[in-house]
Image (cartoon, rainbow, N blue to C red):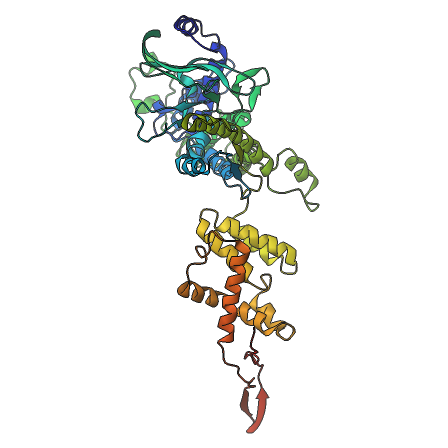
Length: 576
């Protein structure tokens, strides 16, 4: 769709998608409320006003009027739900750590691929894109073209437009924009299928045209960040991984504030005593006008905080004495205190598992009720794959636009975030390995996963570990296992196993680091050549006769020979 100035003015005035944009802004404010760390209340998301209005409403009241002020006082920053949403974010960030992730760009010239590999910026999606997924789900991706070009090629960049700055837009079912109108300070930008225009913009009125770029893409270089829709008939509003738990996050926050209230109110037991004749009740200002502050109220009479006091009237003659002692201490019920603790844990666990999922499958040893609860949660991999699909779509579109603008070549990138994510830590895998000693197949799989996990952010370390693992003739056996079967295995295999790391270090001293040696060559050939080098080390050893050590021990002044276990290596044979 191509927009002329008259159409732009009309769209600014009428805002045909105002309802969807208002819903998007409200949704974003709710997400920000629980995901952005703020230290001052006046800097919290605007949703704080809706939240306070909900908790502190008068009809019907959730809190008695005299408790409202205390609730507001105990609602402090940073909000206590932030820690939970940060944990959820850390778990969901594994979407960028797929072990089987790959991408493909079919350029007509290999030099373009080299240039593109150096130019592309994947960190944008790990940082800006991921953060927007958590608290700005209806952001719009656009291509940003710097006004001044530094190199010999255009330098298109990724940029996200916050929904608060969007004046109007039209989106198709694929999330692609037919046009986009948004503001930045006192400038207005218009993206359509032919041009990118910049105008002066003051008091919501279109000003003079500043600049205009004809991109010749044939489509608008703008798309919604997310693809998962909130409603199937609405292409502007989308569902964040936290959308479905927003109500639970509100209630968890309320519950945590209530718990603070209870902690303060029940830190000390309550003192119950008879009223003394000199005390006065606090009725009205007129009655208390001539009294001192101490006469107006009994100190500690409010049931909040330590030192609370409750007074009961002295019984009249003939009435039952409700107190066996003139003073009594009333402690809070343990059940009530325990309820707040367990309910906090339950809500936190529910929100986390709903957002992140659960690991693995249910087993037969689990109780029936536990199985029913777990069945309501999705698997972690399922959730991560759904998130990955959204990122794959927007990144493929963004890369297609940038490649076409930079190289003038239209290609369809293949982006796949994979399906094997790092759901276990290296420590988990080491613990798991201890239970797999008798299963060579599972041990091999465990070793591969352990290497991928331990060195996921260290490509050089990962290559080195994989090569060493392939150089190990018996990777599933420990040294202790090897000693037990020493007589049934080849001498060279035994030697190679027990001296593996010493040989690796010698090779790296004399040749080059294994991660760099033959880096561009065939992997199998690299491993075979290193093994041949190890055989040279073995052949350098001089053959030795097997020696059986004998020790003597004197027992009751009688000397007897004691044969010790032969722990020397057997006589070596030359290996060709």
